[in-house]
Image 1 (cartoon, rainbow, N blue to C red):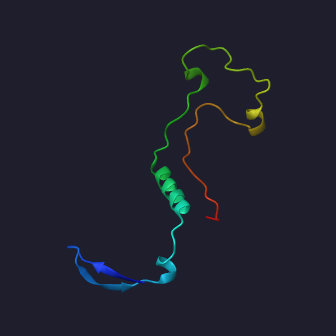
Image 2 (cartoon, rainbow, N blue to C red):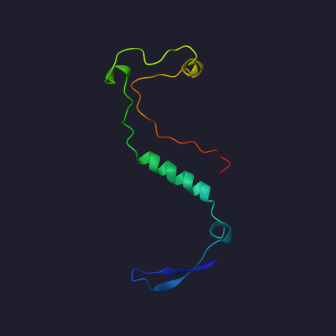
Image 3 (tube, rainbow, N blue to C red):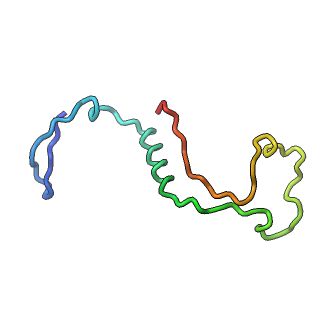
Length: 94
C-alpha cells in the first residue's frame, strides 16, 4: 500500500510504502467503540458519590422491607458513600 506524504502546506512531499498486513485491514467498529469508551471513562474524575440513607431528604422510615428483596443478601452489596469507578473490561476476543 503506497500513500502520499504531505508537508505543512498540504502539498505532496513524497510517497511511503506501508505494510498491507497492518494498514490494509478492515477496521472492527465495535473494537474502536470499546476503546473510545474506555478512553472517555479514564478521563472522568470519578469523585461523585451516591447519597447515604441519612443524606436523603424526607422520611426516616425504612425505605423498603427486606423480605423478598434478597439481591443485597446474594451479592453482598454495600450501600452508602461509594464513589463510582469508571472502568470497563473488554474480553480478549475483540
